[in-house]
Amino acid sequence: MFDDQTHCAVVVGAQWGDEGKGKLVDVLAEQADFVVRYQGGANAGHTVVTGDSQFILRQIPSGILHPRATCVIGNGVVVDPVTLFSELDALTERGVATDGRMFVSNRAHLVLPFHKLLDAASEKSQGIGTTGKGIGPAYEDKIGRRGVRVGDLRDMGRVREFLEQRVARANRMLEMMHATERASLDEHVELLSGYAPRLNTLAADTGLLLHRALRAGKRILLEGAQGSLLDLDHGTYPFVTSSSTTAGGAAVGAGIGPTSIDGVLGVVKAYTTRVGNGPLPSAADPADDERLRKEGGEFGAVTGRPRRCGWFDATVVRYAVRVNGLTGLAVTKLDVLDEFERIPVCVGYELDGRQCEEFPDEVEQLERVKPIYEVLDGWRAPTTEARRLDDLPSAARAYLTRLEALAETPIRYVSVGTRRDQIIAVR
Ligand code: GDP
Image (cartoon, rainbow, N blue to C red; front, side, top):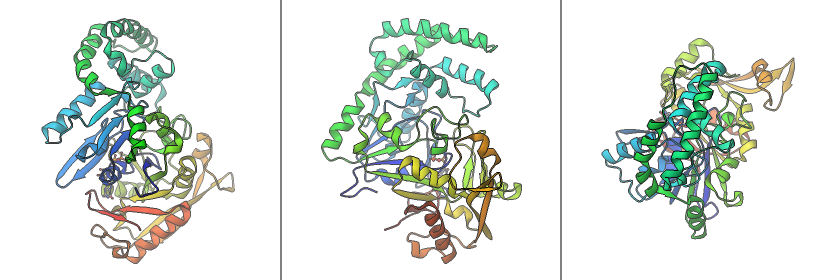
């Protein structure tokens, strides 16, 4: 990904999330000086397998597993201090040195316990299928200009005043929503007073830090969470997440100018999955859905929820190419298809009896589209040991060539297993 022309690259999910971004970031972080999370919060669940160890990172950039990389939680992220420090402590316990390699933006907003109560209460009435981690309500407070930011913790007296108003407001809302639980001011004050000293040591003007790094010719990897189809603006609204997951959000959420970004890698599974509610046009029939879920281990890393499974959807990926300006694709989990005899690929949709070229901008239309399938031959052979394209069975190569043509974007990486080394870099 990085070369003389590419110093600042974004890795985004080009479907509905869980594409295997964590693994790609882990692979690419080896060449990066900085790895930056730019949106979302502890609702992400990146699974990274290094040798025999498995790490699930919710809040901390996956780059932390590479000793050389400095990790940044950018201003666009909402930070849950409880998850952040339990993750940092767990990494330390497992021998990953984090001291001096982690920075959190002063401008990042905090996720507080009352956000989780509000999330649970609104999920009951709205049914979006959120992870219940308080992310949506924390972003609502940010947009409503009543959020508490990491930098605020430098003055705990002021934070206490803030909290009095915020907790009272949250309790009024909980009452309106007929929720039984209430937030406690003391619990909030105690929590933030406890975490403030530690958080203050990580807090920085991270936009400035990255700006200086870019000027010094350092390599920066911006790590997206969730997927393009869950983007607040460009996703299948209202079944979306509360932040800008697409590449444009990387500039805003990291605090750098968009002209600094010179590569955007879209991560796609060789098939499609979706967790939470909302339409999935290329959903497989129940038997294949079950088989894909079993072979691919398609259960949420944060919630354990089963993911709905379907076939590769070229309309979705072409749309992701457009809204992100993708310069390349990374196809993951090719090995999951190893035993399938025939593999359908959704090449387009039919809507109201007419072929529809572009991804619909309304979820109601997306619910009504009929997928148009092309069925490709499976390869019925293991791909997990392949390290070059030439090592793959010819039907697997043909499958990738077809995906590349449908997506109109070059494939740069193919992942054939969970381990770091199970990757093909396409020259
Ligand atoms: P992320 O949020 O996009 O990083 O995705 P998740 O971590 O939620 O899900 C991806 C899952 O797929 C993880 O369990 C990875 O270990 C696994 N994974 C990633 N790449 C591959 C691959 O090429 N093959 C297989 N079998 N599993 C993979």
